[in-house]
Length: 250
Image (cartoon, rainbow, N blue to C red; front, side):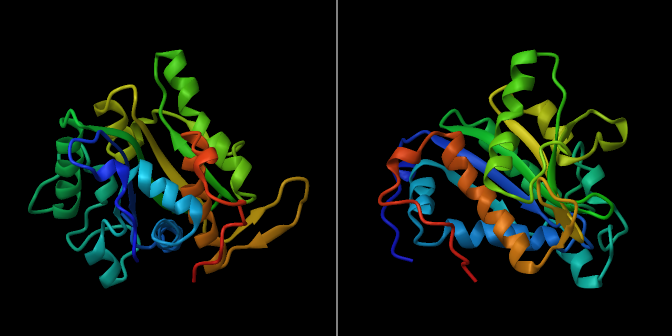
């Protein structure tokens, strides 16, 4: 696509980075559709996408467990590891994708010209409905409150996203996940989330009927995740022309 040179890519420019990963658990196929929605939107000609490209750098690893996906595994990699429990000390031999992504994130974190502001890991949930997020618990009350801003904004943009199902925890079982590990590693200007989406359906507010998810509905959630950054960074005034509904890219 014939993009204009983004302001955030000029030499010496300070970069705000949003890092997104998906499909660390190979059986959670909806995460790939959500991630596809994010990617399709960000590379589209939509005026919101152009503003986002001009002000943010998106780093996306759409499949953290390609060997597990290829083999048809539900949760583990080729060697039988649940990669989302090995963020603390990934092996370049046993967990190569995790090791590479972690090295990249740490390099960006240590670069004074880069602000790694968001890490979002996309999953699918087998028992809960709707889309929702997991966040971290911090002793600093202000940081804890600021962490709630993005999921609250996403709830306003996406009819299938539930803020009431969003929760913040530090369950010991989740200690080796990307969200927990990076939440403890990065500084207080970084926000780390797990984005979950139901395998099967969502309930619209004010109703009791479940709406089955489709591939298009998952991708629509991805598009709404992307456009929520416009609200978070208060970039709405920079969008050229009237804001049409987010298009169906595919």
